Every structure is written in structure tokens, then in C-alpha cells.
Image 1 (tube, rainbow, N blue to C red):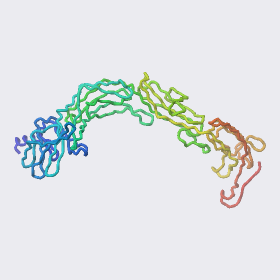
Image 2: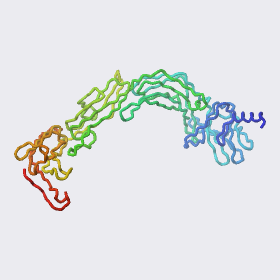
Image 3: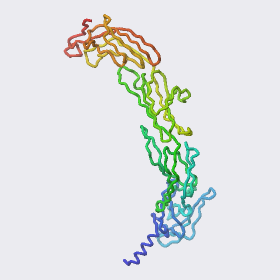
Image 4: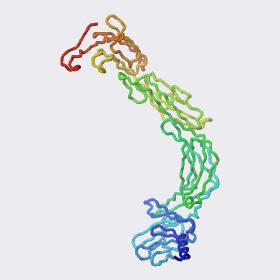
Length: 452
């Protein structure tokens, strides 16, 4: 191929931007950017041209007949549609030698209309020189004053509904994010703004950081994006997370151990608060009411190790504030319900017969904060003593199983609700012979009452 012809073809291609049936000529060094809008706009495409001066637009015919062109735009609350004069036909395509900018196009090829919108970016340039933040509401909002501009780019749907093309201007900064466990993690945040004419506002970050404003999406695609970084930001905003870890007990004779935070007393819980960087003051608050009007305890530490001995419902939260007290934050509220007490003493068991089946004498209880049990034989000899209600008697004395028969217990206890217990009663020990039905399987034997 002739080198000169090849060069001319390459130059022509450099001036052309195509999208299916629509092509543009004379676009220079910046290609036309295609945006696919929401389906409900009725538009097939939005074309963003760097500068429409000298740019032509063509529509390739699929019928071999010239297409008809109309413009549409939004004016004074109404959708205006007008024929476009000067469209040329060359046997393959209809061409508008000079694009009419910031306008919608209805191009009818046969019976099928094609709707699109053409934006002249030169009419909505973005410029960033500097930015300054306003920290007058440091706990809830930061607003930015921008030295520059990037106005909204309007367009309208085929029904005349005004829309704004998203310029995707980015504000980048760092903050702390609670990971719902025990840590605040520093994380980069990127917020997007469709334009700058409505201002830039964000929730204050939880750490010191820099703010960088950059964009927009069109300049970045053309390789000439703008960016500006403001002065270093020192946060005053505070946040906090918290955890509550309850000590678990595995006593099979204790009721109320599966009721969430709380249950059978004593309830031992370690509450831990996790503050953000600007926190200076911190405390745990305990109240009798959810509104924390009746605060019964304040603990000025991140960790509160507490044992609940009294029945009732308690509410706890972690509160933090910055140095001057202008910003404060609260954790989630923890509800701890401590149950009322209960004590039941059995009167029969069978140690040394079937392992794991009724072989330990235990009380059935709930929320006992004090407990003492003594067990005696018929002659008044103390054979067992214990102070943990979760414990019991295995039927042994001096390491050997006692004889079957009747024994006597004395129990004193205090409940979480203040109830005082003093119980006395007898315990009958039964022991099945190894030949008894249901144990050895030989079908013979019976209950051994023994002597005592």
C-alpha cells in the first residue's frame, strides 16, 4: 500500500469515534466517551465530547434510506422537540456537519427511533486549585470549600425528566472502621460526588488524615485528570466498640445457664471498650433503666470486670468523649438479666451401681450466691461437706462407698433475690446388685439394702 495513502487513512481514523450506528469526526486527540444511562431514560447512549467545535456526527443507515433527525431538550419545564436542518445524505449515512451541543437527538431510521444525548464537556470544565475544610461541627459533619469548579452536567430523558450525569469526582481519605470483634482498622475511604456545585460534605473520620479530591471520570479517561490535597486534618470525632464476655459454668444441676447475658447468679462478665484515636474520656455506665436515668455505677476504665449477685435487670454501655467534651459516642447497650433463686434437694440416689446414672447426690438450683451443705450418717458422723452448689456427694466416706440406707443433709444458702434457705432432710441410698435386671443382664438379683 502506498505509504502516503496509509498515512491519510490513519489520520482519518484518528479523527473518528464510533459507536454502532453513530460516529463522530473531528474529535481531535480526545476520543468521545460513551455512557450508557439507566434504561428508564429511554436513551441508548450519552456521548461526552471534549469540545464539539468542528465535530460532525453521522448515523449509519440500516435501511438504505435517509434517517430523519430531531433535537430535544428541556426548557422552562417542558420538553421541546425540533427538526434539525442541514443533515446530509451520502447514500450510506446521514451526517450533521456540526454537532449541536448539550442536546438530545432522535434519529429515525425507517420506523425505529434511536435516542441519544451529546454533551460538550468544554461547557462544563472541571478545575481544582485548592480546598479547605470547615470543622465547625466536628462530631457530625465536615464541609469543604473548593477553590475550583465542576458544575453539574444536565441531560434529560425522552420524557423530559431532567437528569444529572455523574462526573464521579472522588474524595479519598482514611478513617477507622470497627470490625465487630475487638479492633478498629484503618481503612481508605473513597466517596463519589456527581458534581461540586452542591458542595462536598462527609461524616468526620475517626483518625487524622489527608483529604484528596480528584477527577473527574472524563478527564481521567482522557488522561488529564485533576487532583488537589488539602491541609492535614486532625480529627475530633470519636467512636467506640465494645464486647461482653460472660464466664460460663457447666454445672448440670444449675438452671438458667442458657439465657444470654445473665441467667443464674453469680454472673461474671468482663466488659471491654475499644475507643478511637481522639478519645480522652471513657467510662462504663450501669443503670436500672434503658434510658440511663438511674445510673447505679460508673467505671472509668476501658475494661470492667464485674460479678452480678443480685437478681434483676441491668443495662450497661460504654461512653467516650474527646478532650474538650465536644464529641461523645456510645456503644451498643448490653442487657443483663439475673434470675431469682431456686433450691430443690433430692432424697434418693444410687452411687456405685450404674456409672453416670444417679450416682452423685446434687441439689437442683438457680442463682445461689452463698451455699453450704453438710451430710451425716445415722450416728451423726459428718460424711461430706461442700460449699459449691455445683458440686455434690458421690456416696463415699474416707474414699469408700458408704452402706445403703438413710443419711441426713443440712443446707443453708442465700439467693440472688435475698431469699435465705435452710433445708433439712434425708437421703436414701439405693444400690442395685450387679445381677439385678437391667444392669448385668442375667435377669436375677434385686435391691441390696445392706447395713449402715
